[in-house]
Each structure stands twice: as structure tokens, then as C-alpha cells.
Length: 320
Image (cartoon, rainbow, N blue to C red; front, side, top):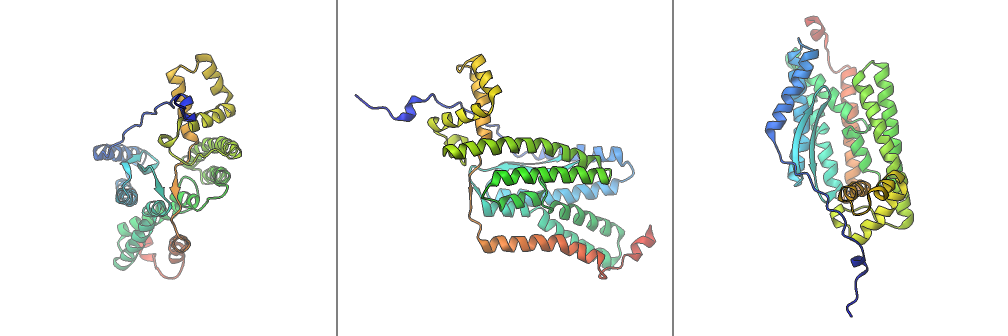
């Protein structure tokens, strides 16, 4: 009699349909148009500012895009969000820590560098439009380097963390949310306030994941892998923990029965959300130290140059 492998005793895990995202520059241009119109609706007489803003954001995101393309990310596309900003979307099955560092840094690092070059040109030729463009380059990219989630600086900071990562992400998201709400209130910025409150929902998500992964660690269940790589046995073990941590989800399964394909797909999506995408820790200590030094330099240097005796902006104020 042929013996069966234990994994054969489990029903096959549900298949999660992947949404295939293709690069669509037509959609990018449409999002730029909507972005521009949304700003012009509020700042109708600031056409130059809107153009500069789009240019700075586009070059910033293009840095991310080119590095992601170089490292063979899939489903790449760039989109602008009205009254907020822009982002580049892409994914990989296996991530590299070193590549991820470079992809994140490829937006703000060159952005600050461009801003400094334009600043020197503006000072030399005393061109108002160059000075305003340089300020925008420096402000947006230096701001993006601050270690606040979901800014690039926050994403860089999270990549350094390995031990107790989920606890750190929970605390980090909470502090980021409180900071944005506080600053938004103090400077009367509804955009920052909105970001802060949106971050609070992310805090709750991190909290659920933290407690859930604590239980997975206690049971010795690996969750640093892709959904497609889960065996049926491993899937069902993770599923039981997810259901134990989410009574409403278990009630939903009991109400509709395990045979319900739709309910099983919902549960599978919850299991998938628990998984942490594998990342190869291939960044050397020397590389990390260099990155941190560049990070600090690009945050502090623009401030040092602008408040120091290196530039004379009296000519700018005389033109106002």
C-alpha cells in the first residue's frame, strides 16, 4: 500500500489572483494633468509654481523608477496624486536589502544634489526662477529624507531594522502619525493632518500584525516567504492562527462553511497579509555606514548653506 505524505492530507490552499500591472505612460500623463488642474484650481495664478512642482516630483520619482527598472522590478508605473504627491509602483518576488536601499535613495539623494546645483546657478546669475526652483527641489527632497513613515527617509530607516522589526514598525508608525498631526495642527496644514490621521489606521494594522506574528513566532511558524511558496500544510497552520486572532473571520467561515470559495479567498488574503516579503540581507556594514553619512550630509548641508554666510539673497528680495 502506497503511503501518503502528510501534506497530502490538507486541502489545497486557495489561489489568489494577481492583478497584473503594466507600465502605462498614458495613465501617468493623465494623472499629471489631474494633479496640475487640482493645484491650479486652488492656486489659479501660480502656473510657474505648479510647473516647477511637477518637474521636481517627476525627477524625484524617475530616480526611483530607473533603479527599479535596472533591478528588474515588475509592474512598474508612476502616478501623481492630486494635492498630495507622486509615487512609483513595482514589485519583486525576492528583494535585496542593498537594492532596496539604492531604489529608495535614488529619489531624494539626486533631488537634493540637483537642488544644490540650481541654487549655485541661481546665485551666480541672479535668476529668480532658478532660486525658486532650487528651494522647491531642496525643500521637498530634504523633507522626504526625514525618518517619518511613509516618506523615503522612513522607508530607509525601516530597512535597517531586523530584530523586533514589527514592534519597531508599530512604534515608528505611531510616532510618525502623532508628529504629522501635531505639525499639521501647528502650521494649519490640512494635508499633513490628513496624512497623520491616515497613518493612524496604519498603526492599527501594524498592531494587529505585531500580535499575530508574536503568536507565529511562539509556534515556530515561518512567515518570511511569498504566498506562492507556501505548502498546503504550512498555509493551513497559518490560517488557524489568523482565525484564532480574528474571531469575526472565524464566525464568517462557520456561517458560510469551509466550502465557500469566496470566504476561503478572503481568509487567504488575510494569511497573505501576514506574510513578510523575503529580503536578502546583503548590505555590508560599510555600505550602511556610507549610506547614513550621505543621508545626514544631504539633510544638513542645504540647511547649513542657506542659513550660513555663503549666499547673499538680497538681490532676490529686491525683485519682490
